[in-house]
Image 1 (cartoon, helix red, strand yellow):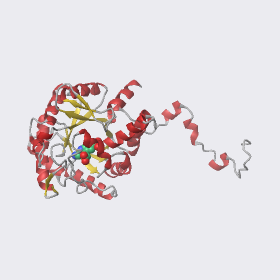
Image 2 (cartoon, rainbow, N blue to C red):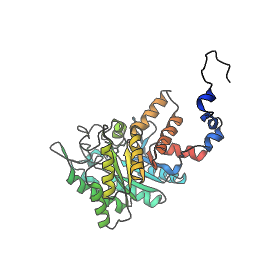
Image 3 (tube, rainbow, N blue to C red):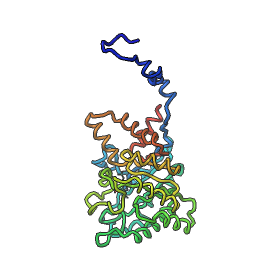
Image 4 (cartoon, rainbow, N blue to C red):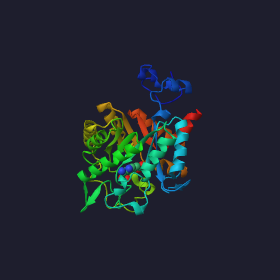
Amino acid sequence: MSDGGSFPMRRNVDEITGSRRLRRMRKADWSRRLVAETRLTVDDLIWTCFVTEGEDCAEPIAAMPGIERLSIDRLVGEAKRLAALGVPAIAPFAHIEESRKDERGSHILDADNLMNRLIRAIKEKVPEIGIITDVALDPFTSHGHDGVLRDGIIVNDETVEILAQAAVGQARAGADIIAPSDMMDGRIGAIRDALDEAGFQDVAIMSYAAKYASAFYGPYREAIGTMGLLKGDKKSYYVAPTNSEEALREVEQDLAEGADMVMVKPGLPYLDICQRVKETFKVPTFAYQVSGEYSMIEAAAAAGMLDRDRAMMESLMAFRRAGVDGILSYFTPTVAEMLAER
Ligand code: PBG
C-alpha cells in the first residue's frame, strides 16, 4: 500500500489493475529483448539509390543530406559492400541527362540507357544481390510525368505498351524484379505477358500497387532531376490520400494481373494501408520509406530536434510492426552497418 502521496486514492494500484503490471517485463534490457514481438534484420532492407552518368563520381543531393547520386562504377562498389553486409536487394533510380529526354520518354527503350548499363554491371560484378528495377517514364520524359502526355492528358494504354517493352529490355539486361512505379491501369498484366512472351517467366514483378499522390516525394524529384520539369501534378494517376478502399482495390487488381509482391508508398503516413494490405491479401508486402520521410528525419536531426539513429530505427521497426515483409529505404546502408556492429 502506497503511503507516499497525500491524495486519497479510493483503491490502490493493485486493486485497480488486479495485480497485473505490464511494466514488469520492461524493467531490464534482457527482458525487453526477450518479449520483443518484432524484429528488424538486414534481410528486411532494400537499398534505394541513385545512378548518374560519369566515372568515379558522386554528386550530393541538396534535398537529401547524406545521399549522393553515384556513377555506375561507384554504385557497383557500394552494392558489393552492402551485399557483404547481407542486404538482399537494391532498387536503383536513374538521373537521366536532359538532352536524352523527350515527350514520350523514348530513351527508356534504349538497351544502352543508364539503367540498363547499371543492371548489366551489377549482374556481372555483384551477382549475389537482387536487382529491383524501376519501370516508369518520369526519368525519361521532358515533362516529368510517368506516362505519355498528350493535350494535357496522361495517355494510359500507349504508356502501358512502352512500359511493357521497357520491362523486357530491363529483364534482358538482367533485372531480377521489375517494379512499375507509374500506376497506369493494366500495366502489371501487360508487363507479365511481355516478359513471358520474351522468355522471362522467372523475372518477378513488384508492383507499386498503392502509390499515393504525395508531397513526400519532393526531394526525389531533385535527386533524379525532374524537379523543374514537372508540369502540373500526378493526381490523375496516383491514389488520393483520402482513400484506402481504393488502395486495396489497386492491390487486388495488381495481384490478379500477376504481381508477385506489392508495395505501399509512401510508408509511414500510410502504415494503416500497409497493415490492411498484409492482413487482407497475405502476400509479400513492401513499404517504400520515401525521400521526404528520409529528409524529414535527417533535417530534424541536423537541427538538433531529434536523435537521428533512434528515429531511423523506430521508423523502420514501425513498418515491421505493421506487418510489412521489407522496406525500401535510403537508410539501408547506415542501418546495415549498425546491425552488423551489434
Ligand atoms: C515516379 C517515382 C516517384 C518516386 C520514385 N519513382 C514519385 C514521383 O516522382 O512522383 C518517389 C521516390 C521517393 O520519393 O523516394 N515513378
